[in-house]
Length: 217
Image: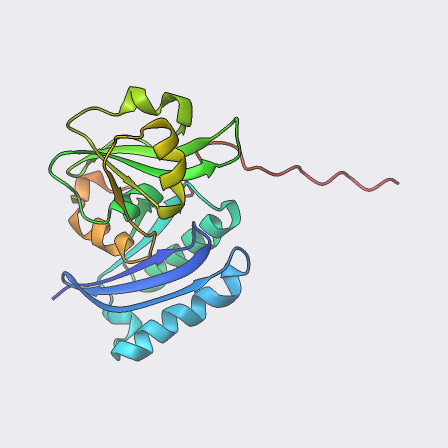
C-alpha cells in the first residue's frame, strides 16, 4: 500500500488530495486567489482527519510548482517541502500542466492553461507530454497554436481556455479538464525516481507585478 499526498496552490484555489495506491481517498478544495497560507494547513489536516491517516504514514509528498499564481506557488512549495522534511520523505514537483493531464497518455499531448486572456496578447501556459516524457513548460502565443498542433496530438485544456482555442483552432478536438489537486499525486506516483522534478517554484516568465517604490526620505 502506498499513500500519496498532493498539494495544488498554483491556480485560483487551494487544493489537497490523498491517494491510496491509485484510489482517491480524500479531496479538499477551496476557491481563492489569495490567502492560501491561512487555509492550506487546515485543508491538509481535514484530509487526514477524514481518512484517519497520520501524517507519518504518508509515503510521498508532491506539490504543483507552476506555472501559475506567483504567491500561491511559493506557499504550496514551502509547505510541501516542510511536510516532507519533517517526516523524512522526499517531495516531488509537478507542473500545473502535468497535474491537468493527471495520468500520462501513450500518444503526444499538448496541455494548455490560459496565461493572458485579453487580446491582442492572448497566451497559454503550454507543455508537450508523451507518456512521462515531457518538455519544459513555456508560454505560447495563441497566434502560434497552429505550429504546435498536428493530426496525431491531443489537446488538453481547462474550460476557460476553450473559447480562445476555438478562435484559432476551430476544428481541433479538445479534451477539457478541470484543474484540481488530484492530478498532482496521480502524476507524481508514475514518475520514475531518476526523473523527479525538484519541489521548487517554476516561473515561465517574470511575475506580473511592479515592485513598490521606496518611501521618500
